[in-house]
Image (cartoon, rainbow, N blue to C red; front, side):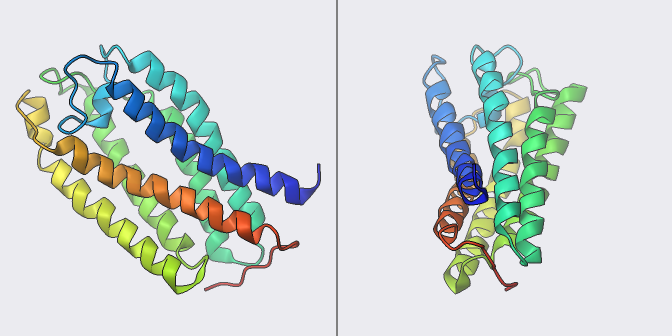
Length: 216
């Protein structure tokens, strides 16, 4: 297999990872009677005691390697672009964290407060910072439009993530959390979409062999 085909396969892994995550979220939400896609958190689908936890674990063992592979593909596609190389490294770290997440599941509503719940929140914060750095370094990949799109993605993550954070105490207290599911999914899906778009952009650049992206 030549290097160009290998890059292509690795970059496609990024697109597949986003489709897999979103598809699993939608499917899992449909499997729990009474679960509200609009009002409940994504993490509740993988919570201890949730009937969809085995499904989420199985997805994670596919999703994480796909993201790691994508990170390697970005690294191979970066050429002399140092920022894009850093993006590839951060993507691979993000994928690796997918396995670490499994060690710290949250509990169901009303039973939150254990060590794993605390670490789940810590992991959330670390992941958000990692993704913001990843998007920031990768924002110069495809001219002005991609830089603007990257900034909008970061803003969506931060704004809707902050709105979700305000409702976290209500989850622990087993109180209603109106629209929390929508707000969290806007935050999470925006980063998934960015990965997908980056994959498409680099696949187009993959037609140039060798790839030689200058720093932006």
